[in-house]
Length: 395
Image 1 (cartoon, helix red, strand yellow):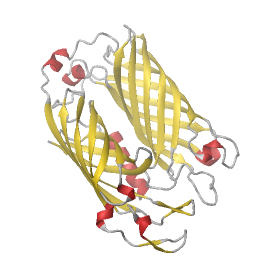
Image 2 (cartoon, rainbow, N blue to C red):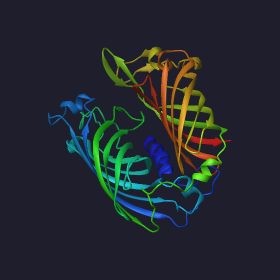
Image 3 (cartoon, rainbow, N blue to C red):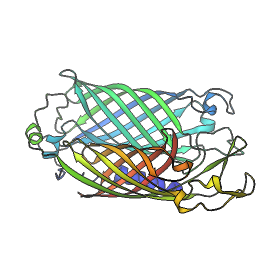
Image 4 (cartoon, rainbow, N blue to C red):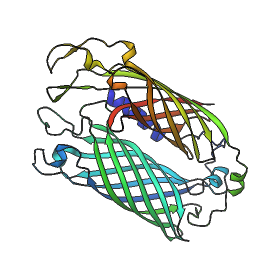
């Protein structure tokens, strides 16, 4: 059930490609420029878990990974209003195959994801510096099992979220051919819905080729389209109200060892986020964040039982409910927007809800005001906390 919940949220994000809020513009899908790309990405596996350092069945460090990506994307016509506002943005769907050193214990996952990219800076007539993010689901992992895969302390589920951020040089070889090369970061995780969940982190390079079809996108040409539309933009305030929920697992420490608490715990949350829209590409503000997590501080209410079947008294509501304030910034693009935040709980009780928290969220518009929210929360800048799967309303 938990895997299905993760998958539903991710797939709705990947395939829920409707209009963005957005710029109060109606998307025009006529005259699109279509793009087909192929990437190869060699990577180094971050040595952040004993399993990767050599404490595995093979007795060898797991250092290398390689992935191949087939991608389809499109750009809006430069003759459309949205195309003039975002002349270099592209978005689409990709599929990738991932090879890691130890397939026997990690598997050979396949990812399906949404992605979006655009130009950061024009370096010359045929060269630009771009960014691209990928977000989706990866399938085919070999998860931790106490009997058959006991060394694997990194992956706790067969389905994991796939997140990637890359920065690349984009060289226009010919009017319809581009060569790309750059660096990227990749993270695989189940959002604390299964245990263990240290995840897999990759640091690597990428090289790819892109073929365009349809009207020429003029990706590297001087940016003149859209200038008049940007000049008439008037900054304004918008307000996002988000309701989300998820399930999560919780571990406990006993004599220096970590044990899983049986069962899953539910959580619900609400964010109210006023933001000032500085321009069509960026908005920022402060968010009021409330969350109830029924797993919070259960360890401090231990009742009886051993590591295999511990019993706990239910903590009072005051110890499982928290309210904080976070500073938020949001990159706004066609269809998607990416929201990041750093916050601090001001109303809380207990160690689990104390201190700082961080949020990364992807918003996918379903109507001009309704959007899908898929987010992830960290605690104290390092500890995985929970998924944030929900809906938002912008007014």
